[in-house]
Amino acid sequence: MLTSSIWFLNELELYKQVKPYRLDFDPEDDDFPRTNVDRVEIPGVPIHDIRGNEGQLAFPKCGFSVLHMPSPLTTLDYDDQKLVADHYYSYIEKAVQEFSVKFNPGAKVVALDHKVRLIP
Picture (cartoon, helix red, strand yellow):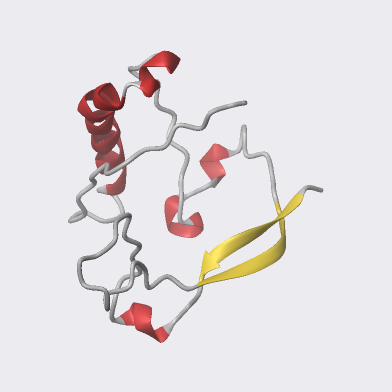
């Protein structure tokens, strides 16, 4: 069986009062930390192929779900940052908002950033 080390958010008392955060920029105030995230590594976590079993991964139980969404963009379109931000973000926001309203009716979904994985 395939296993891996996975990092999880440490269960700190702090997070009962303050949400975990990570800034992608340097704050102007040098005394303000870029993050308050404290993670813990758990080794030997089994990795499973979920294909064909996506329906068993209920958000309330697992903390995630798999949404099958055809992309309105082609593979090459993802190199165009403006095209992705102008067209794909709204598509993703709408789909995730429609899904998440079942679990958190007051939540607002906002796409902030994306990363493109390049295969060498």
